[in-house]
Image 1 (tube, rainbow, N blue to C red):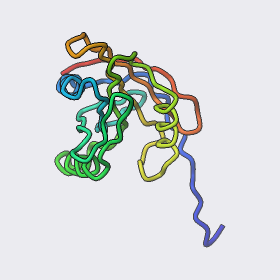
Image 2 (image 1 turned 45 degrees about the vertical axis):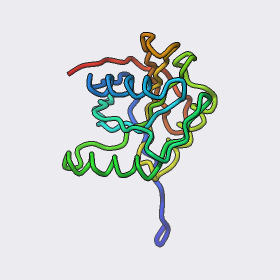
Image 3 (image 1 turned 90 degrees about the vertical axis):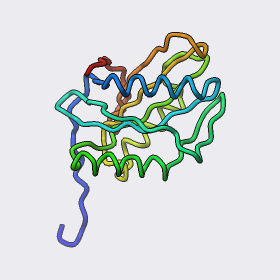
Image 4 (image 1 turned 180 degrees about the horizontal axis):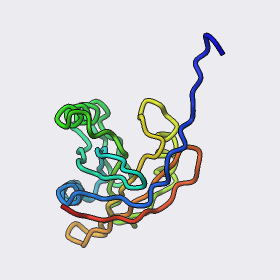
Amino acid sequence: MEGQLVRVLHRARAIVRLEIDSSVHERIVELARQKFPNETGGILIGTHDGDVVRIMAASDAGPAADESPDGFLRDGAHCQAFLERQMKASGDSVTYVGEWHSHPKHEAFPSPTDVASLASISQDAAFHTATPVMLIVGLKEHDAAPVIHGSVYPERRRGYSVELATGR
C-alpha cells in the first residue's frame, strides 16, 4: 500500500468507570446552578487508565456560548484554549476525554441529540478519542440536589452508562 494513508482503527478497551475529582464535580454543579434555567456545559479533561477514565478538569461553556432552556452550543475556541492550557500545565499528561452539560428541569439522561453528538465525536479524528465520555447534571430546580449521569460512546458502537465515583 505504498503511497496510501491507511487509518488503523484502534479497538479501545471498554470503559467501566469514571472517576471525577471532587473539585470538578463541584465546578460542574455550580456552573449548572449559575445558568439555571438554561442549559450549559463544556469539555472534560483527564486521562485514560485501562478501563477507567479520570476526569481532572472541566471547562465552562465560554463567553460566546449559546445557552437556552432547551439546549446549548459551547464556545469552541474558548474550550480549545482551555484544553491547550490544561495540557501544557500538565506536561501533556492530560487530554480531552469528553463533554458535560446540564439538563435543567429534566432527568440526567442523554437525549437523542446528546447520543448523536457523542457518536459523531467518537468518529471524528480531530477529537483524538474513540471513547468520549459524557456527564449530564440534572437539576429539577435551582437548589435541588443534583443528579449526575455518566456514559461512554465508543467508536462505531452503542453508548452505555458507567459507574461514577467522586474522589480526591
